[in-house]
Length: 278
Image 1 (cartoon, rainbow, N blue to C red):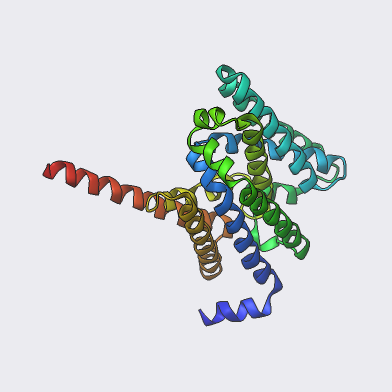
Image 2: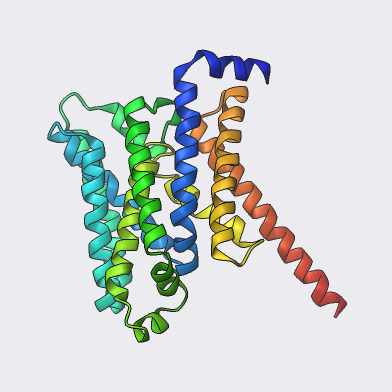
């Protein structure tokens, strides 16, 4: 433990990794509960996979992969939101096609990029230890935007997440705010790609909220606890990856997943015993 604290005080990349984990947990804890409550994790998955296409095209054109990821994520969020609202019978097909096309485009353009930027493939698996000061600044801005939006429109987001029909009766523009929620998910996804990679992004977005929802029913409490759960496991994952020389992103996700499955199993056994007694 002492060597870990010594390494933190000596190495800037570890300090950036810890700060990146905190910022990631903040944005996930704020937006993740709405994804969990509205049960749109599969939508977030499709958005995450289209990100790779935007990254590949941007890299091929010599632009910033992050810029390409942002454009692709927002574009796919708008398309998926529009289809979900007006062509729900085709929702699965559209989402699956965007999912597949995004991955395919990304791999093709990565392969065709002159010099073959192997570092771009790290976005598939993530490397929190590569977060730079510029990345932290951008993350801070995105966290501020997401938190401000949720703060300003919290009652509306609450209404469209729990009872869409009631929101329509109250005159709320459900379609507009639903698409804005998906855009927030898209921005969050792009942020997380920097930290845990494309393959792992959905787990970190959803599981802290799912764990918190097992113990609390109030959405504000779920948000607060999701932030704390995300921070705890992110920093714990960094520590164990340092101690055991494991890749950091997968270590974080494995810890969260094991805890979530343990909680679910414990809840199932408790309910089973109660039913058996009755």
